[in-house]
Each structure stands twice: as structure tokens, then as C-alpha cells.
Image: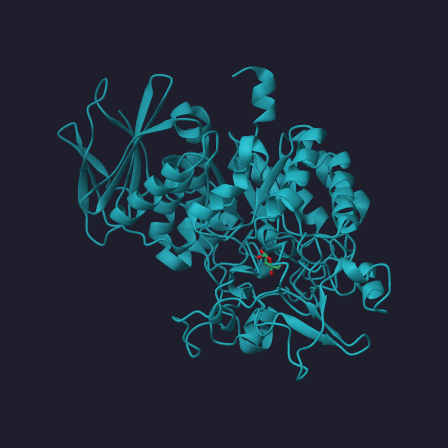
Length: 537
Ligand code: GLC
């Protein structure tokens, strides 16, 4: 690759790490993480071997949705620090060769944003049309059946101006009207502000929600919805409220044009859609986001045939020049080690960081095998849990503070301060300090995997020679520049073996997640239940 292409496409050969800033490192002693705290922990990220950091929102916010309700798109919330702290963090990241990606929340602002305050002041306010207002039905009812993802109707009545406004999430998060060119200009100006500072890209929050059906038609009713079991938003299929054809021309293409104008900046789309519909967001000829998040592993069945089918289907649907990406979790999802168990989480890491082609994103804490923490009722913070109790929608368990050491509060915040969410049971074995340098720890595995990925072209840019289920085991063979590696996984509950394809010499195990992975008779790799290995062929 020529140097300028390599620079332009830096995000292909990159491992991204997501930081939920409230929970990474508290530096000022208030029990909530902050920017100086992140800066203090950059060396952990360098040691780990990642290339880019995505930080969830740090803008001024009333924190109804912990920062995903933005009151000023070009400021820093004092809870996280100052603009100087941000500039220092950006410079410190760049000094260490790390890219910094911010979270941009285009679909909605906070109801405390001056734009919304103006908009709701009167029907003829110039900002009125920056949000989405509708008259009530004849009996005063909501304009249509659209559901809020945070629970309840997506419409809230504004008594002053006697209209409903739309909020795809909490009532404190009114949806912006992206059909209005002034909104588009204001949002692009905010992105430009950060790009000019040197930010390397944005993760675009629920970007596929930004445009709604112009006629506000009811969403179709979901016949499979069970009121008892399912969250209320599942009662309708969001045909008219999400994924509209105009999202590309009105929202994403202008953002991408700006990212390109600023030079080599990355856009990642948070888009929860089936693969077939996700692909549209790559855009024609690179006019979309470079990485439409592929969340398939979050809901995947962890069996060899299911994984094989999922990867094959995704690769088949990828557009020409579309670069793949994969994630195991994020701040909205139960953690991988809780979903599939700690041993299998190590196997999942091998799949993510070595088995799969494309750009992986690690969620903070995955590298030490963090699990969901049970939240006592009096410590619940997430409004989703309050609005939809018992439906599994609460996100506090996966957002608990990072575990640095086995000191009280785990080095996250001072010991006499209560962390904003409980730490759970901290022990030496589940902290960064306790796992550093320990053979067989998750942290050692992540570091070894990332080092191997960096040193082996087959792992960071290699193609697939094979993706196949051999019974209950998965075999992936990847190659580049003359080297061929087999990545073998045993997601099943029993030990098993994979027949390796012939290679140039004797196969050699480069990495394994459990001690008793072995090569037998030259071409057979045996793996205990839940184990994975990388074998040079
Ligand atoms: C995204 C975020 C989530 C937030 C929602 C509304 O899904 O990841 O945390 O609540 O958007 O902004």
C-alpha cells in the first residue's frame, strides 16, 4: 500500500477501544470518571496494543441519559473536565500514536439545549421547526403509534404550545428535524469544530433514526410481541420511524463529505439493522460511513454452524470495497463474559481479534473479562430500567467502573467516595493490576492477541481461505503475504478436534486460551470445551 493510501485508510488496520467516560477513571474524586482520568490511563491502552479510542459523550448534558442528551454540541461537561482537559487528552493520545474518536449524537438533543428551549417557547419561534411537532388527534391523542426506545409513546405533550413533540428516546431527548437545512448546517458546524481540533472521527449515535416518514404513518403492529415478556417498543415494527431512504442523502452523505474534506477522518454508524439493510450505509462509492457497526455477534448463537453462517452471510452481502467490522459488546449490552461465560469470552476474543476480517472494537473491561454487576434496586441509575422494569433493558450492569487494582473502589475513585455505580466483587484476579503479567489471565491473552495481530499480516489484513464448521468446531484459515494461520474455536460443551489443512511445514500453536489445547499427529488440533487457538500452518 502506498503511504498516502495507508494514511487515508488507517481505520482498516486499527483496533478500536470504547471508553464509557463515567466509568473509566475518576481523577477529581467525585465518584464519576473524567477526562484527566482517561489521560492518566492512556498507557494501559498503549500496553494493551490498541490503536484508537472512542469516548462516549462528554458534552454538557443534564445526564438524563448520561450524556446522550446533549445540551451543547461544542462544549465539555464540567463533570468530565474542561476544554483544556480535552485538548490535553487529545494531544496525549496523539503523542502515543492513538487516534481519538468522539461520540456524536445527531438524532436528538437534550430538552435543555437552547435550541429546544427556543423551539418550545412559541409556535412561531424561528427554532420551532428544528424539532418535530404534531397536532393531537381529535380526542387529544398522540399523533401516531410510534414507540420510544426508552419506554412508552414517542410523543410528549407540550402544554404551552399545545402540540406533541417527538422523542425516539426519553422525553428529555427531543428529536431534531434533519429535514430542516438549518439543523443540518448547525450539526455539521459542530462536527467541524471537533475535526478542526484534530479529532480523528465520530461514532454516530443511532444515525439511522435521523429521518422519519414525512407522512408520519403508523408503524405496523408486531404480531409476535408479548406484552408480558417483551419491552414495549417491540409492539410495533419501526418501518416508518427508522431507516428511511433520505438518511443517506440528508444526513450521512454530508457528514462523509465533511469527514473527507477534513482529511482521513472516520465515521462509524451505530445502526442496529439486519445485515442486508445495514450494507446500504456504506453508500455508493464511499459516500456513506466507513464502518456501519456490525452488531451480529451480540445476538449470535455461539455454535460453530451458526457462527460460520453468520460470517459467511455478512461477507457475501458486503459491498465491493466495504470493510468489515465486528464488536462483542458496548455500553448498551450485557457483557460478553456474562452472556457466554468467562472461558468462552476468551474464545470470543480470539474470534474478534484474530479470526474475523475487519476492524474490531473492544468495550472497556473486556480485556480483563469484566462481567455484568448486579445492581441493587436503590443503586439503579439507568432510566430504561425504571421505565421498563424486569424487561432486561437496564444498562447499569455493563457500565460499572473499570477495575484497576484490588484496593477499595479498585483504584477507580478514592476509597472514601461512593462510585456512581457499584464496583461489584473486586478481587485480585479480576483487576488490571492483578492480571498484568499473569500467565493465563484475560489481560495477558488480550495483549498476546493484539501483539500477534500486529505482527501477522494474515490477521490484520488477511483474507479468508476457509470458514467452515467441522461438527461442533469452527475452523477459519486466513492468509497474507505467504503466511497462513488457522484460527480454531470450540464453542461446544465437549472437547473436540479440528482437522487442519496441510501447510508448508509442521503446524505450530502460536496462541491458546487453555493449557490443554494440543496438536496430534501433525494435522489434528484438539481443544477442550470453550477453547480457541491460533496455529501457524
Ligand atoms: C444509543 C446509545 C444509547 C443511548 C441512545 C440514545 O443507542 O448507545 O446509550 O441511550 O442511543 O441516545
